[in-house]
Amino acid sequence: MMNNIEQLREFHWMMDILQNIDVGLVVLNQNNEVQLWNSFMENHSGLMASSTRNQNLFELFPEIEKDWFQHKLESVFQSKIRAFSIWEQRPYIFKFKNYRPITGVAEFMYQNISIFPIVSTTGKVENVCIIVYDVTDIATNRNALSSANEQLEKLSRTDRLTGLNNRGYWQERQETEFAHYQRYKKDTSLVIFDIDHFKNINDTHGHQAGDEVIRQCAAALKMCARDVDICGRYGGEEFVVLLSQANEEQAKIFSERLRKYIEELTVNYQGIEIKFTVSLGICALSEGIETPQHWLEKSDQALYKSKQGGRNMTSIAQ
Image (cartoon, rainbow, N blue to C red; front, top):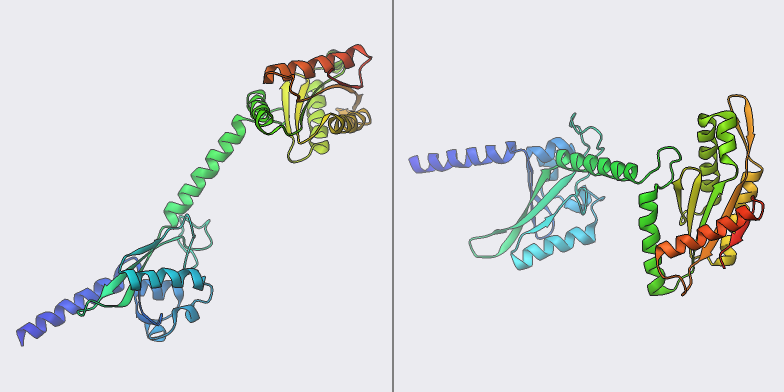
């Protein structure tokens, strides 16, 4: 009699642990029917254990990707080896709303899942247990850190005045494009340009007006460039553009479009209207260009040719 009472007590506290533990516990049979559904699952799903008993899991939660999860379950039944799912690969299995105040930015609960076999006395796996861990705090903190790191990385390569790529980052990309050309021989062109008579703008209207002209020139560049083009501020009033998959003729078309766009532009600064133009130089990569620095020098020579030719024009490196 005492033995039965002890067993009953042991069963009672074991069930109490299962019900109050802060993880989800679900036991499924081989037909994917729910055999156990603890309080965690009740609280987050809104489904009482009595209503889930012997119900098919995929009918209770049709949003679960059945083919993928069924494969996970079957592998545990057959191999008797645990299976896992982590939030980095799949944010959640059960689409539970996130109600935690600290991680309120997440709409749904991030989850890690463990599935392990329950072996019967005969050595067969007739049921599997799914453990659902709420890892929303970890996931949101890591996502926030990742987002902050991305912002820092972006700031580290961005020119503050113009929002273009700064010189350090732009030169890294130039070296990469040069290496790609060496290997694949894909057309790539470099355009360098600057603002004509920029010193006169500063001397006449002040440096703040000059900064506004630089900003508007950068905005014009962004307007004319493609998403795949790499635009940067080289220094002062000088800009550079890497035109991916663009030959000499295509680079000239781009340069003339940009030149004419800026020629028609009027910068308004504190009631003052400022007109300005740019001169451009182009160098398309070829076998004769030996280094990234040589490539830049050839583009600069073409820019100098435009300056010598009267400004507000595009020249191509010889």
